[in-house]
Amino acid sequence: MTMSPATKGNLRSIAPMGMDTPSIAPRKAIHSREDLAIAGATPAFVDPVHVGRPNIGDRAAFLSRVNDLLDSRWLTNNGPLVQELEQKLARYLGVRHVVAMCNGTIALEIAIRALGLKGEVILPSYTFIATAQALQWQEITPVFADVDPATHNIDPAMVEKMITPRTTGIIGVHLWGRAAPVDELAEIARRRHLSLMFDSAHAFGATYRGRRVGAFGRAEVFSFHATKFFNCFEGGAVTTNEDDLATTMRYMRNFGFETYDKAVHVGTNGKMPEICAAMGLTNLESLDAVVEANRANHRLYAEALAGIDGIHLLDYDPTESSNWQYVVIEVDRTFRASRDEIVAALHAEGILARKYFWPGCHNMQPFRELYPHAGLLLPNTMVVADRVIVLPTGTTLPPETVGVIADVLRVLSGA
Image (cartoon, rainbow, N blue to C red; front, side, top):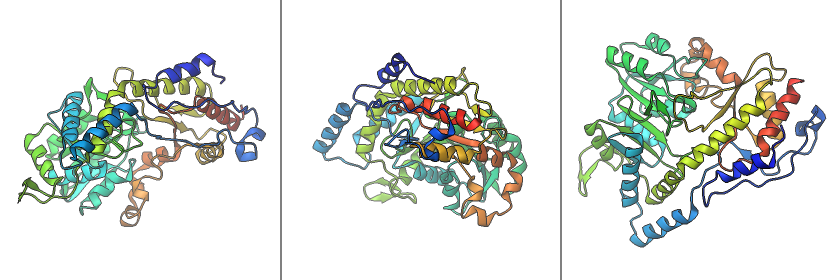
């Protein structure tokens, strides 16, 4: 695929004011295996192209906020920028409460503890390891349920089968920003008297049946890590419509303090610093432009990969809003190269594609040792984990990247 100057210009024009724009380099021609870097040819990129390279909004606006917070000398402890960010996020997500945290993992741990989960909690194995570790850290047994191979999200029918007398909750994951089966999980939770929460790290700005993710279940947990399309350098939040739950989590993130000298709950240090809130407020102002950049990149991938047999690009529901944060392909078994061979070839070109979330939480420690036979109940998880590649996107994606990836795949396919 050769990109016209107009296409390259369009990609550049959707980057918000003050945001880094990709540099344009001469396009490497890849027509045969001899042209691949893994075969000894010159790599396509000297500087690696990463999955999840941070999007950065208007630098001047961010630095202005930093100067203000330095002048105020209020650097942490629920400062005005954190409060402003919580209020703006609550309006954006359509929820009563947003409790900002220092990172998404602490947000998970606090939400789990505030909900009173114990015993066993059901979740997918096909997710980032922190979802399971947040349970294990608190001596709660994660019980892994299989996924729907079409969506990669947890399968409600498999959740039902994993419930035991020790089950107290379900954690759904909105994988790739495509909403989990919210209604089905909610019905199971209601009927079986379980708490339902969601790991929404991928789904900021996404919708389910026209409603923004954030108000489902008893609580939803977001990550604002640097690699997320909306980031606060580092950070996270829990959203909920339950007043008492929000109050409890606010205590818990600040050592349990209700006032300066009065601790009323067990707690930890989960506070978001002001500089992270400054980054979040700045990036929130550029959100639409970042989403449009991701959407444009996904469209280019769809055009470039069309017709390559054995490669399937996961699409997004056109009836729902999406952040288009992840470009995910599945490598069919009919493809002439394995998934790992494709990843190795792309890495040699300087394109650091990723094998999310291989090999599944159940195959990582300590879970692999604790539950050595879990994989017998996770056939779809095993298949999906062995087929998925996540490709780079975002506002700094060099436009040549998409064409190089398509050329590498076409050569490896033998076409």
